[in-house]
Length: 144
Image (cartoon, rainbow, N blue to C red; front, side, top):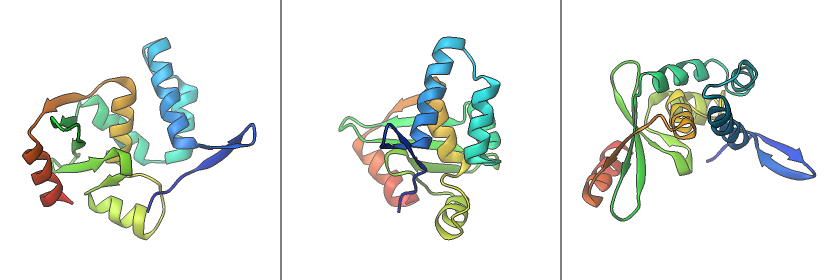
């Protein structure tokens, strides 16, 4: 199940989270940092988890794993030291918070790990690692 915050721009639906991450990318390119206005918008949409996600990005806790076949998964070392697997394209994370606050209680649209992945990608503050197809498969079989 995927959750979207939609808005209408010129009569067309726009995914607000995607729009915000595009704004993050643009702001980083233009100013070299995120503005207070943009940080406020992120907090308004995502709430408290955005603060934890920003901390994870600052600590460079996100790694993009890419296989020769082009499959991509992200691994995030959480604040507890536990590593979680995130599938950005399907907005999925293996953490308990994702299951409980996103899927069960529907309190938020992303856990802090998914937020961190999207932020790290947007500002190009991400570790990269090329791995075999078998490694990606093993992570998906074990973690998900």
